[in-house]
Length: 437
Image 1 (cartoon, one colour):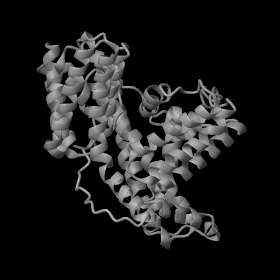
Image 2: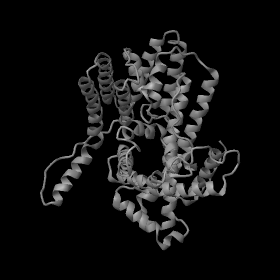
Image 3: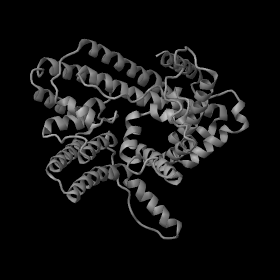
Image 4: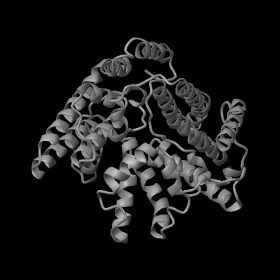
């Protein structure tokens, strides 16, 4: 079920009424309603994949209970790695099986050895990358004794499957979201109004900005060989706002919907395209994912505590894994590696935390230095999105090669150019509103 569908427009009021007017006097009943509503929301797409969520829920709940009773270090490690193996095993099979198989066959073919192996017609379960990381955060935090394991299977099921953020995030930590299922909730009118505003703003991002930009980004990227450099630049810009409108729009709807039910989710996007350097961009873009990788991968690897070689290694690992998390294609790996290259100078010269304050604090417009930093960073981001959107690496190389040709100075020309101009004005309006906010 999509947020911008008629189904959801009917589903949400029904759940809201049941939540506040039927089950409002019983906390466990409210949590049970959330589980049923979440399973209905997810099963609307394909009910068969509900078994994955249920299995993951039972495994991590059980491991949490066992960890609470186990003091032996070796047994605790076995329980932790069982959770990691089960969760990442499912994720790896559904998302990356064919990718690894195809590359395995290609590698042997390169050396003249033919291997007969058939790819599987695997359907990627919606949201598996999100709820897998969410349940993993619970097990890891319980293992590290940062969180008391829950004995309430209904509350834990609601935490894992919470429908507002089930399929597109934010990736919530158990330390933040799970305790909210233990507390009695009272309807807060001002909070609900604020939630509705955020839902409407998210729908604007998704329907008006992302969907309009997608129409022209797809046209230009899918037929890039037919267009000159200036048109390809415009295509990259359309995709830049398409992906931001999609990701942040869905996050806004999720956060707003959660507020209708009395829950607080973390902010996931904080005006990232106004960032003054790449480090600031990654503090503002997909915050729940970047902080997850920081806390559960980067810091355990040693973070920036070691020597220069360790810092470089850890930086590349976290960015490449982040790229691979987004999709099973070498273009995502290159996108991640490119962002690591962007980030390295800031880390090596210890300037990655120079821009942590408010942009243009106390002023309506940025200073020249800030403006130059914003434009430079935005240009680097647009360039990296080309790899993210391209079908394959050769497609990205050809796309970029044409941009750096004399055709860059031609007037952009593509199918639907007149309506595309309207979309450009909508983007300018959107940027203006975000800057004012």
